[in-house]
Length: 172
Image 1 (cartoon, rainbow, N blue to C red):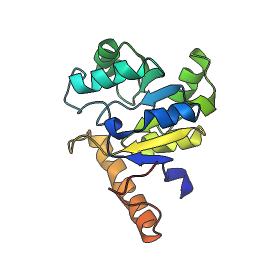
Image 2: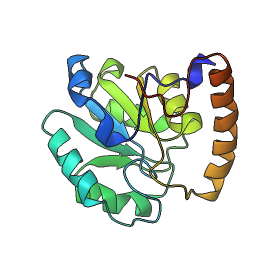
Image 3: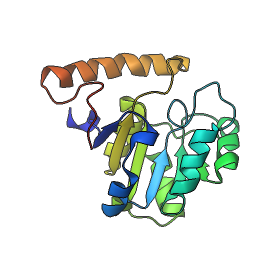
Image 4: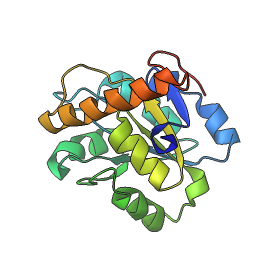
């Protein structure tokens, strides 16, 4: 079960202590797109998100790693001035490996941030990097994500029974 438990759990990307990550040696933040940086029906990056990411770029390399298409992530990459990998197929580590190799970062310097346990957290854990789970920004999901949420609910219930994780109980 440990493979599904995030290193950190925060309400959203605005609630993460980025200074603490910097102190831990993290210099590369990899964000999921849908329901992490923006709602799935937002074609462009929300201004509040843009402002946060722009401020983080002073201290971190920022990337988007999405299971979605290039046409979906490209407007966000342009709005934010960041790199990204589409069609990551998370929980595959493919996208994380590409970022690590292309930008010459070490695993110990990377963190994966996303709203899904069975994709974002699992990919990060399998790649042996810090994982930060955030609550989804919205209730609307892609159809395939519905299946992921079903399995995620089962995983979370097991963690809750053991007193190891509970939705809404945030931690660093």
